[in-house]
Length: 339
Image (cartoon, rainbow, N blue to C red; front, side, top):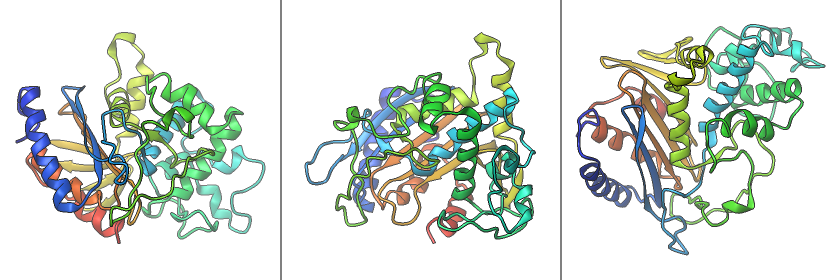
């Protein structure tokens, strides 16, 4: 049932309901919210399963999820916007913007730039507990949350704002992502999905109070809005910078594995149908598992947000069913992010 077809929206909803319900039961996944972009517009948003396995409250299109690393493309979007305005430079050492070097005893940190952080070639490790370089920046690819956290500190310094404030003012509000935030808000209490472990047991609420590069709280619809606005900016306003920003984010910067690459914020798989952009949010054991895939050429996108540590098992079979093809990225994701 390829999404490239022209199924009536009601037919798509009916078929999607049957397929997702079956996958949730098979994989013991508590709940999921899905948004599908077709012809560069959000075609539908649906919720399945439970927001909380104990209270039995259902997932709805308004349900909020912890995005985890799906936050990173939004951070990349903000950083590149600052580059366009001249406040940041893609290839200038980030240490130049700070009052002290990120790592005192290793001058190779002078090679850490916005480009290398967004393409995960900074050499910094994924964990945030210790500052060191695994390799000389620019030499190879290695996923790094710590790199994004360093970039966040730089953005905080040059904007003079708290990270959640600048992201709200410069990204969420302009893109009309009204249901999203980088920190907890009391209004989320009635819609927040509860994370669950692999046995379906609810986990403790985090209620994030300090924003960082993994702290986005969002709905599937809001995130799909970001996908639409960042990949296909509105031509009506004639803002050439929006097109430049969109092109910049999806240009391959480094080979990850075979036909998999990384751009400035997105993973990229080259296929016979052109490049597909992707990102994962939540690794092994995380109580929220999320995934996004999009094709700029086909005008297609899908956002999958789950509140289950088992949620990652949903991505590949659902994508294969919707698009009608296999992707090499899933083998890579399984070996790298779920090891």
